[in-house]
Image (tube, rainbow, N blue to C red):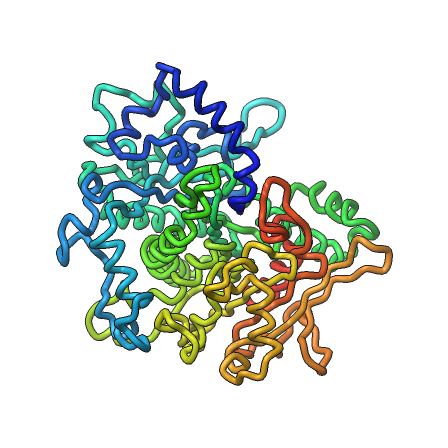
Amino acid sequence: MKTAATFVKSCSCIAFLSAITSCSSISTALDPVERRLGVDGAFEREFHSTLYFPKGESLHYPGYVVAVEKSPQSTIGGPSTDPGGTRSFLNTHSYYVQAEPGVGNFNGTARIIRDFEVNDRKVLFVSHIIRYSTIQSSSGPSPYQMIDQCFVYNAYRANGVLDKENDMSKITAWHNCPAQSFQIPGNIGDIYMDGLKALKKLEDNLIDDVAKGGYTHIVVIVMGWNTSQDEAIRNFNDIVGNVVEAAYADTTDANNSSAGTPEAKHDAITAQGVSPEPFRPLVVGVTWPSFWTNTFINWFSYGDLANDADQLGLTWVNVLINRTLPAVIDKVNTQKHKSTAGLKIVLIGHSFGARAATRALFSRPVLEYGDISKNPPRSDVDLAIGLQGAVSINRFVTEDSDEGAPYRDFKTLGKTKIVLTAAQNDQATGAPFWYTPSGSFKAYNKACEGANQAYKSVFDCWRAMDTTSSADGTFKVCRVDDTNECLEPSSNAAQTNPQVLYIDASNGITQFNSPGSGGGAHSDIYRLPMGRLIWRLIQNYAP
């Protein structure tokens, strides 16, 4: 996440560049279709850059990018065009929503849904879904492998967006996936609800993937404030890549195939041309329009984009983790593929992405109708990690929440383990004074150091330490109490605790500034120490 402070430094440069580019009479290749969708602004293009550069922006790992953008409701047939009709898939009358303390309050779930479905001029919609998979050429003296892309869905091809006479394949590499794997877009006025069809087609693709690929985990990732699509994809690669790196090290230790430096351990595995068996991830990265501009004005977007993060969690990420992925798991269990036995789901969100991810985790009830809507939240996610979250810890605590405490029934989710991180040097989550973001150290202290029994019943407090760069360094995750209990791989004691695991990651994990970002150490989640922490959590809660 880049903070607004970073943008201020580049204001004069941006103004100069804008003066030059504003004089250009040459349009972009996608300008006509962008204008029809209402996403033709310079910064709006930042959230569909894969359409311009489909070969240059890519996952390094098999998986998908699910792109969400924002367009006028009147253009794409959003809920406001048919109030109370068929253009909404959310049930605000769900028992769980209606049972929120102070259900009529300003920040309650029903109010949030009503605002973006009825009152907002624009609404989030599924824009495109891209599949990344390994292809291999058998010709020549040796096989040649590469990651290539195809579109599972592309709203920019919808009728009324793309001219029938205009063949975009002559302009950019928009390759559709094979017919059975591609969702044909409909009319421009149906794009909002077509997002459900797109995610259903993603479900079909995922079922095919896990049946063939021998994956161990489906990893869903959502990034936060001020993250363009290309940066989000880079972040997906870094987060997953560092977990793979940590798994490499553990695999070599277990096999005694190498000793010494991490580089030697890594080389011992990669020389075999295979990934470590404990972690073979299928990645689903969600991108969304998370900033207004690259100037100081972006400071004023915080409240609006906080609401958008909730909207994202209530809608498309909700459908993804509570409808799409459960259907995949059910199909896998039915088919009983040996290669997919024990497939686990890991959900990771950073900053506002943690807000969207945790909101989705508790939002299954708004997708359900009839008697089933009386059920409390439940989830098929095995492990949900909120890294430096821009979401209030009071959502878990009924006594202190002014948002209806939408996370109050965390113990009813079943097998899902929720983990939050905080850090002393995180200046981004430390700045808001009107709520207690989970990534801030003041929130951690409030939950872990105080005497409030309501917090003590919710949060299980730990500290992580990574000093492996020193000669006698170590990696540890240990309780903040007198027990001296530490989280070892497959610690049975930790698995049985239903509380939210709250980790102080200040010592060597989330400690430094990430280049190109503001907020102190807020974005220090892309280094190997965080990979080690996530891998340790996976070993315990999603093995």
